[in-house]
Image (tube, rainbow, N blue to C red; front, side):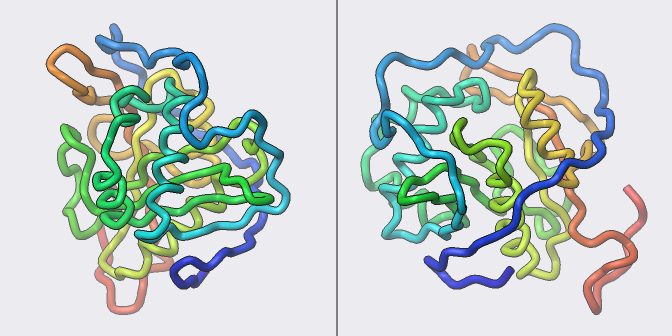
Length: 241
């Protein structure tokens, strides 16, 4: 799926597939369970979001920093159980910080009928406190993924992840995608598994430290971009992991 900056792309719908088992969840729990929704409505949140049909994808550039800000705050507000960072922590960020964040990674947004309904990010930097389970040049990290509740189960997630996968494949050294899912977010975990993500090697579960007094459990999932039978030309065969 080739694209140019700012281009909108129509893609197809998602389909269900087999779901494999993960490792057992750790005993106990995090020091902070993801919170409930704050009162009111954050910046950029419409009173009602229409169902997306059809969905178009937009790669966000520096000029889209306000779109990123509004979508990210909507995500933290609408789905606090899906993110380790609370809405209140980012809602007061200055504009300069949003501008910098918009240009430091690959961001894709899903749009329908003039309303943005999804967001996802691709970066080469591992999340803080997560270590580096694979050689850095072989990995891209999928983060900040969110789909508006009204647009779920309509292929939006699949389309955004397919876009990011194409971006990751632009570097032939990149072998896999990694992401983390918060403990208890079973819907997201199942959705990712339908789209080809599996339990990553090493520790399935690990603690993400938010502050000196806050932490949450997260499960690491991976997607191999090049199975042994479909390695890119000139690449070296890797041992099974």
